Image (cartoon, rainbow, N blue to C red; front, side):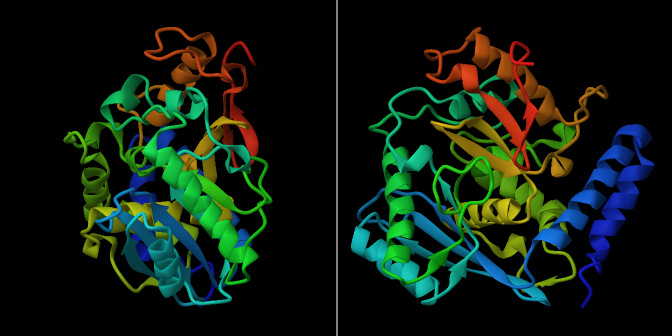
Length: 344
């Protein structure tokens, strides 16, 4: 099947978008089309990426693993769950991913710093996604060396690398400028990844601690996750529907895998700095619209531009100024996209 044959639902969405709020939505529709063209050019015909939702219970299987794979014809995913026990994590990764599999990318839901080293202060990435509208739409928690999320995310990233060193699998080299490791391992964050996909006027009210589940359900119900996958992997059918994924850890792991896919497709945005790490989102052409009706036309872009200045100048930050505030940046597909006003 030709790579140009994209889901009919996707083209219907583009056409509907262009007919409403004509100026802003036409721009968004055109950028979507160009993004899909880039994905067709970049994505291998067959491949697989790994997503990991970090848990730290030694008794309950709260660490979610998702292998997202595609062929020329279809897209599918499989899950495993594991505890924080190192041996069990390794066994479940091996049960999920066959030996000698070439992983094109890995995304882990937890803070990751350059060269997978410990973080010793407040990060710009956490600050960017903790201010303004992001506070009510699932903000990032501050990272510390003792943070269980940070500790276990780093351990899992090192486990991924060690399995390659043991020649169990291969992980693609990181060829993108925002890399934190020699291997294509990036930091995912399901909550802002999902919330930024939703139009501002349609954002559901969320319960504390359940933001990722409620955003996931909203996007699975309205078809946006299917549209995103259809745009990143055009010309293929989905073997499963995202709405069939009901477990919290499975959902988060799948979003992490999609995050890795965005990087492989060259359709991603990052926020943070080069030393303490960056949170990765999908390309802004997929982001939800702003309800203000003004430029910028995407609410997440509007908020990130404000937050950049707040982080750079400290402003009303609820925490100490991030260590590398002077280097804070939002990038798109490996190039600077937003700079604080004092950097411009």
